[in-house]
Length: 289
Image 1: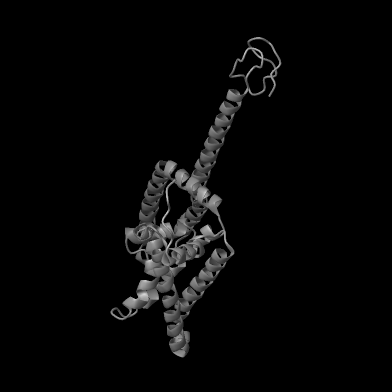
Image 2: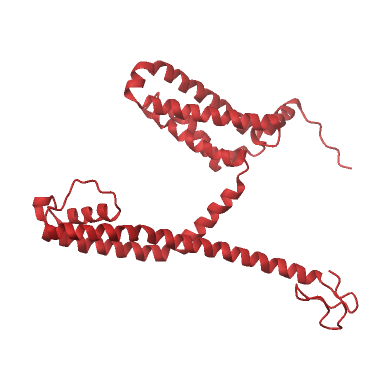
C-alpha cells in the first residue's frame, strides 16, 4: 500500500475554500455563487449610475466608496481562487480568470489613468458564471449548434450581402440623379447611405425624397427591405434545422447499431438482425429481445 502524506492545515484550508468557490453542489458553494452574482450586478449598477451626470454630482462620494468596496471584495475573491486551485496558472490564463482580472483592474488603474474606473462595467461579463451556477449546459450546446449553422451558411450570407450592396449602389446612384442636392443627396455615397437606411427600415428622416418618382422608388425600396431582412434569418434557420437533423440521424444510427449488436439469435447465435425483426433470418427461430 502507498502511504499518503498527511494533509497540512494549509492544504485543508485550501481544499475547503476550493469546494466553496469552485463547487456548485454544496450549500456553501451555491450561496457563494448567488452572492457573487448579486455583488456583480450591484457593482455594474454603480458604474452605470456614475455615468449619469446628475446622479454622479449628488452621490459621487458614495458611489466611489461602493466601487472600492466591490473592487476589494472581487480582489480577495481573485486571490482566493488562485490560492485554492492546484493549477493557478491554468486559472489565471483561462477565460474566466482573465475576465476576473479585468473586473478589478480599472479601479486600480484610475490612480494613473483618469476615468478608467468607468471600464469596471466589464464586470457584467462575469455574469456568464450564471451558466455554471444554474447548470445551463444545454444552452451552451445550443449555442454550439447555432455557431455551426452560421459557419455552414456563411457562403450564402456573403453572396446575399454582396447582392444587397450592389442593389444599394444602383439605387443610391438613381436617387442621386433623380433627387440631387435639393433633397440632401449631394453625392452617390449619400444616396447609398439613404438606400441602406431605407432598406433596413431604420428611417432616420434626415434625407427625404421630394420628387414623385423619387418617392415612388423609395416605396419600392421599403417593400424590398422587408423581404431582405427575412432572407439571412431564413438561411441560418434552415442550416440550424439541418444541423439538428444530422445530429438526430447520427444518434439514431448509433442507437440502431447498438440494438443490432445486442439482438442475437438464441438458437444459432446469428447477429445483426433488424431492429423490428421478430424471427431469426438464418434459422427462423423466435428472437428474444
